[in-house]
Image 1 (cartoon, rainbow, N blue to C red):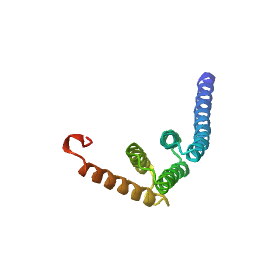
Image 2: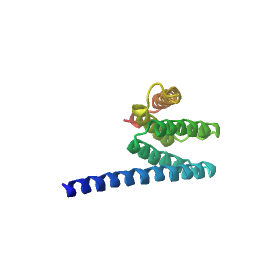
Image 3: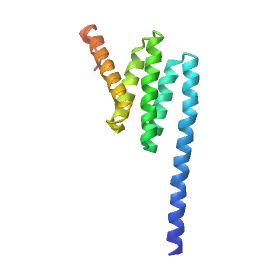
Image 4: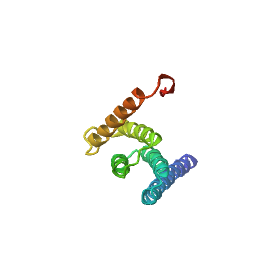
Length: 139
C-alpha cells in the first residue's frame, strides 16, 4: 500500500518536472525567436517557432496555444513587411498555423488572424503552382 502511494507521488512529480522543463524550454525558445528575428535569420525563426509549437502542444494550455498563434501570425507579418519571399518559409508557416488551429478554440482572439494567414498562404501556394510548368509543380 505504501509503495503504491510512493510510486504515485513519484510519478506525479516526474510529470510535473517534465511540464516545468517543457515550459522553460518554451520560454528559452521565445528568446531564440527574438534573436533570430533581430538577425534576420528567417530559417531559424521557422525552426524556433516549430519547437515552440511542439512545446505548446505538449503543455496543452489554452493561454500558451493562443500565445504561439499570436507569435506565428506576428512573425509572418514582420517577415512579409521586410519583403522576404522564401517558399520554404511559407510552407513552414502554413504547416505550423494548421497545427495550432487544430488546438486553438474558435473563440480565441488570435484564431481569426491565424485562419486568415492560412487562407493567404494556401492561396499563395495555389498561385505559385499555377505559374509553374507541370513537371515542377509541388505534390
